[in-house]
Structure formats: structure tokens, C-alpha cells
Image 1 (spheres, rainbow, N blue to C red):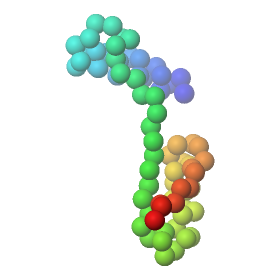
Image 2 (tube, rainbow, N blue to C red):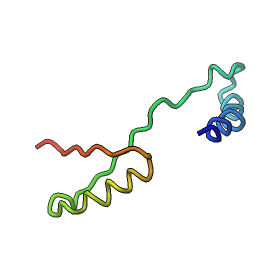
Image 3 (spheres, one colour):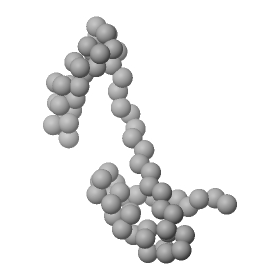
Image 4 (cartoon, rainbow, N blue to C red):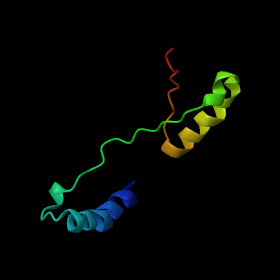
Length: 72
């Protein structure tokens, strides 16, 4: 995780400071939460489509995905 923080501090913060024309690095917007969403219209007829989709979200975020179903 340190490499991401170093990349953010070394590359992204100076670029944002230049783009937004701010003088302090504390004024640069920070990422606090990144929500992931996946719509599966085919899961209505085939419930087995949920398992591979959940596995993909786990590989992307490194956290177990919580399955929530649409309300009628």
C-alpha cells in the first residue's frame, strides 16, 4: 500500500495543485471512498451468474462483496 501513497504524494498531488492553482497540498481533494457497483440483469433468470461476478469484485477490491438485491 505504501507504493500507492508514494505515487499519490509524488505525482498526483503536485499535478492537482498545478491544475487547481492551490498553494498548499492540504487543499488538494482526497479520495475517501470508492463504491463499486455491478448490474446483473441476467441474474434474474440464472442465479449462478452471481458467483463469478462476486469473484470478480473480490479480485478488484480485495474485500468480500456484499450481495444486495433490487427492491420491487
